[in-house]
Length: 612
Image (cartoon, rainbow, N blue to C red; front, side, top):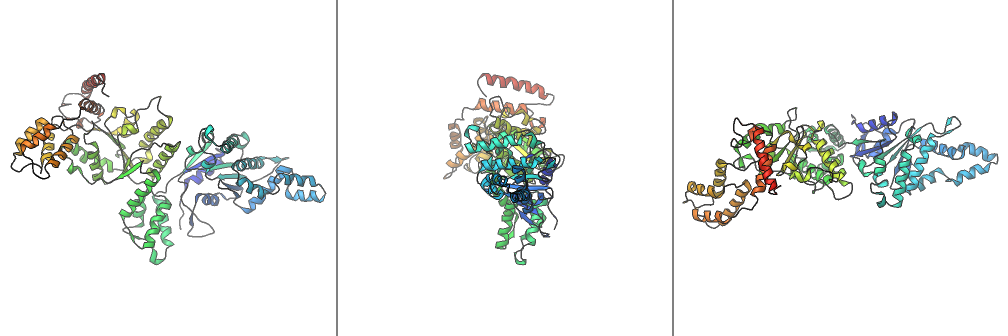
């Protein structure tokens, strides 16, 4: 069976062998399953990361040591254990075990006693250190010193050490020094001194720390300039296809997986799943002897992503309405169908990185673009709040999000009220928030995500969005203003509003004309709210013209006109398509620059009035 290609073990090995780094962090999808061929087994096996690295790096010339903070230090190869034990004894006493035995026969017992005082037996020393984190890191540091030492001109140990520290974030947790326990402070201090020791940095030994995120490891270590990190990504389509095939081959004939299509289609649709999550899907279907349908896969992907990021951070939307159900906005809907949706679906050079949808509150932004998402038939991920209240967790959540997005085939990320998520940054902004916004901006323009991830930011306050997000190449590729309906569209809203609610004997045309006078300046949300009021009153009896007009006249709109005007002007100021600006605001022959100067004056007037 063909194997699976993993870049991170090779990249890590190159960094160690070339001398680029002796302190390395492996981060990312570290809790998953990885494929290895072992014991000449043609089908191979999927194992945890520690076992995978132990098998890949157990090569001549390398002694592999694994430290698990749960309480164990072990040497991968038993023959190497004897070599290391012998080197340790010689380093501490100046003699090997065999030489000590000879000296003992010559009655030189003091040397043997000295060796016993230092730990009695190497195995016991490993056992004791495994139970005490401070003792463990100090022992590992001494082993590296032993490895680098010579007696005379001869090296004590010919092999190089590679030390793997599992769950490094538990051993060396990120926190202020004052909040660390005394034990953690000692461990961090030992490692910081160890990794910065020129003898270690210029030597041939290496320490590989494993943690989900480098930011979870204490910054006294993770921010050392010579500490390199390598990413374990989520499995790509090729890796998922390999696992599906491998899993199916191991099933009995009556338990082979049944699919609605091919295994390759299943691999394509399971983007975003880890191998563990994919295994659960396959095991369940095999056990129940049921066919896996696309709906099952999508539900599994959604559940898994939410489990990784939490429901407070992401939400999946399945909009059921389309643009046909959007009242008015004819010019905008034509643009969305003819230009926007095709570029949204594209994965080529014409693919759209993202768009910003702006306009005053109640303009219908969310409803319209949920309809766009439904028509584009894309996986829609709503990003709600990626900031975490827990120290250091915001960076971890972002990294999980990035890895998940890279593994998905195509996804639309919607961010409502984007100004509150990625607002303007200033000197008072917390460093974590600045880093988060910077990372999101970088992800928007990342070449590896172009055509796969589309960003749709919606805001009533576009002027509060970071200029870096508004620039071309990011969500600023296309800035779409959603404006209040003009007179012709307002009439359409009125007719939609009174449809099936008024007495059939009522003259709808005359009533529409009268309502038009009462609803000047109404937004899409205001019409929807008024429609709900009329429907509520007409449940028992249809309303006549007088009752309808009295009901509308009784409603006093909220005093938010200046605020909405300000938001609409900001939307116009940032619009990137002349064709999306109404002719009455930008008539033929008038340049956008002239119009912007007029809008800017009005914005200044509103700001003097205290409107923001």
